[in-house]
Image (cartoon, rainbow, N blue to C red; front, side, top):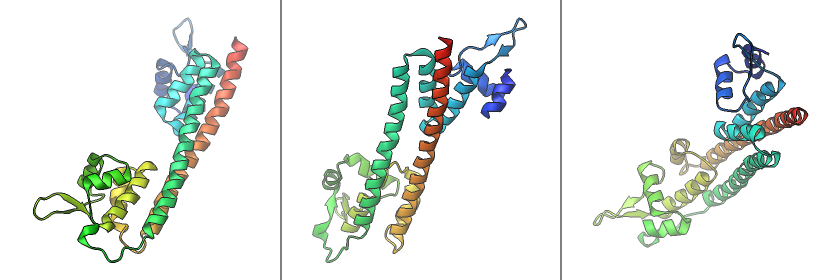
Amino acid sequence: MRTVDVARCAGYSVQQIRNLERDGVLPPATRTAAGYRTYGEVHLQSALAYRALAAGAGPTEAKKIVRAVHQLPVAQALALLDAAHARLDTERTELSRAREAARAIAGEPIVDVSAADSMGVSELATALGVRPSTLRHWDAEGLVVPDRDPVRGTRRYTPTQVRTARIVHQLRKAGYRIAPLRALVPELGRARRLEDVASALATRDAGIAARSRALLDGAAALSALLSLRGRAA
């Protein structure tokens, strides 16, 4: 096959195929007497495996896995693939915990609130298991903005703000980025906040499912690639 043939079958541009060869994702192409590249089935399967794995585990990890198939013992290549699946499993577990925690925390009533019920930065950081600098970062980003002591200017978190911090903490553990959270936090104090949090987590869940399917496709392509490698050996 010519470069353009592999590119067309794999859904890439000609330059992208050349880049993948340069990066070791595709083994070196054979050259004709005139210097033109020629590719075989192993190159196409390598490109297909990389494409699927990149969607599931990211480009960096995908390159590591496909390069390992070409350069390392099979067991080491499979170990990298297993690690990618394990990371997705961890994300699913954290997402499930975040969904349960957000539902429980959002439903907690706050009554008879007094100034004595507020918490300082160190107290809240210890309660959440995060660093005080994390709470200061959330403050700067507008995620959880505490009150300020009128005399000393120190941060004090009311029970409502503590509850918001707990939800933010769980969503961050589930992989939610700062920007989407910044848009979501104002809704946490409104009646429909639980629905908003649930919708946000459902979007995250759909993304994990798509990446999991991509890894499945990548594993199939890797299996075909390993078969080709075995025949070549």
